[in-house]
View 1 (cartoon, rainbow, N blue to C red):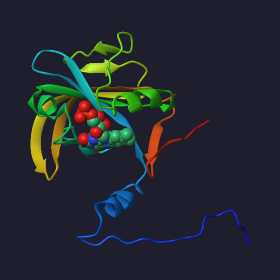
View 2: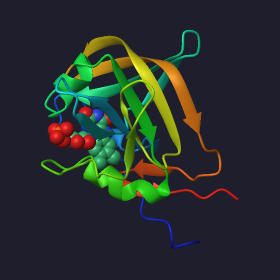
View 3: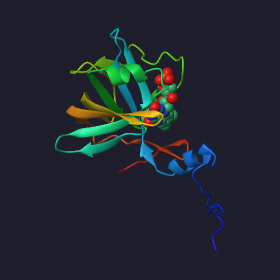
View 4: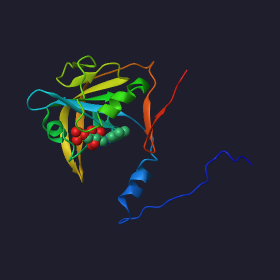
Length: 174
Ligand SMILES: Cc1cc2nc3c(=O)[nH]c(=O)nc-3n(C[C@H](O)[C@H](O)[C@H](O)COP(=O)(O)O)c2cc1C
């Protein structure tokens, strides 16, 4: 019998349990990593790391990302006419960390450019979805921000940055 596998220790969350346990349970869902960007009311670029990204609809073309109501950029995100979802590739882990760290100067001068629809785009992203704001729904301690995709570009040759159980992970495809 192999001794390499970690001992299995299933855990359980029930309503009223420690929210940390729910967070750990949700962390079992492996995701990609995005940086969501827009311009604030003063025209300054703002953005944050988000893995709550999902597709919603092909016709019309809709996607969803959840923005914490306490995030510094929350007001800008729900007030913006357009936003962008930058899907990160393996080399962009430093950007993911920067866009998840408070008080950090997130936009370096050379690593973004204005998109066709206002929102800043991160250079060398695996994919970029430029969106028109479509709807904002209440989602408890998050805003559910739904965007209508007006432009998408992607580079199928790049490998995705992943997030699983609270750590960054990589996948390489030949
Ligand atoms: C991998 C990862 C995924 C995250 N996903 C989300 C998310 O989906 N929504 C969100 O609001 N915050 C998410 N965060 C946390 C925000 O990036 C972070 O709280 C935010 O950038 C705080 O800075 P701000 O308040 O200045 O915006 C995530 C962080 C990491 C590291």
